[in-house]
Amino acid sequence: MDAVDAAWLRMDRATNPMVINGVFILERRCTLVRLRSLFSRHFLAHARFRSVPVQEAIGGSWLEDPDFDIAEHVSRTPLPAAAGQADLEALVARLATASLDPRRPLWHVDLVPHYGRGCAVIIRIHHCYADGIALVGVILGLTTTSPSAEPTDPEPPAATAPEAGLVGWLSPAAHWLGQALPIGGSLVEAGLKWLGHPLDALGDTRQAASIATEMGRLLALADDPQTPLRGELGLAKRIAWAPPLPLAEVRTIAHALGCTINDVLLSVIAGTLGRYLDQAGWPTTELCVRAALPVNLRRNEASPLGNQFGMVLLALPLGVAHPFERLYAVQAAMRELKDSGQPAAVLATLAALGHLPAAAQDLAIEMLSRKASLVISNVPGPRERLYLAGCRVSDLHFWVPQSGSLGLGISILSYAGEVHFGLMSDARLIDDPHRIVDAFGAEFERLLLLTLLGAATVS
Picture 1 (cartoon, one colour):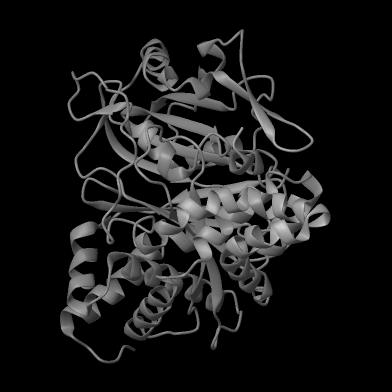
Picture 2 (spheres, rainbow, N blue to C red):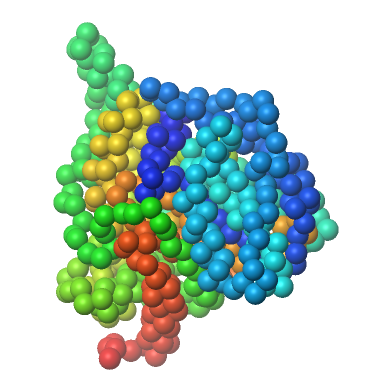
């Protein structure tokens, strides 16, 4: 097993399972037989999904499951006939903390046969199999653009345009990839080599110095401030999603104010979280919290699986009330990170930790997770409506896990001209996530109104 994948395998905690969760809401009902057939023919084209990840003292291995049975991985999980969004959210949250059988490949699909006029499909896959951008590519590879078409095997994820998602705006950092993965292992190897051959090891350590220095800067950051967004975690999760925003309107704001779509969406999140804390009676004057943003570092290799992404820590200005001022503060912070070596430093560190005992990894992950208050993941989705197993997809959402002591994650996914927000929270921190997600729309409308009016102040 690749060292980075092994690091994700060992990152599981009872309070934070390392599982990526997704939901497809379909306009028609799908049969279990048809869904199992779809996953058997196309999902299992990737041999890794027939394999069980096994932890070892250092690293891990993939072992093919000799008794693999699709019925163990694709099953029915019904809801009451009159179930609504709140019931589906509660089910997804419950499944998000349910353990996947360690004796079998760590993924599962739940068909909710009666939801609205159609059905829902809940997908759970452990992070060690692949990162979010790769898994979105695999899952979307199961879909078609017409109800009668047959899916083809998913293509490797292509490079995204700067405005397509957070995974693309740091494209200058991609040149670090060729160094990050080898250096991650060499950080460990160089340390061992130094003990016996210090002069020979000098060249290796110099090669790794730039990335190691960047990681040192990250670890030297002060821990994020204590707010209701951080705290002791429990075993229960809460999940919610908001009504989508029109992508055309988001693009209009970005064009009018000379920023990116990402700047706009991150500013809306910052404004919403600031108002949430204000309403909770928490002082937000000059308050900034950091968000961990995954950054895609993969190239167009033959296989889309595995974990090849880094991370940057973005300061969100929650204490800036005026939407324009907050937007430009986010834009400035993003520009400062644009040429950062942070993504490669995090990737290299995970590669190094995959070669070390689990205790050392736990300590490093805990130290790093204290530098932020939440994870924000933004993945560009398809522009046209899709069909899964012949059923039209009306809505889709995903949530990446939070690692270490983080208890809040916000996901952004564009689909068919709309921007979808989802939130996953630890129940001890945020028991009612709709208090946040339902306010995204209002915060966006404030920014849109000011943009259209060209206003300089807001009441």
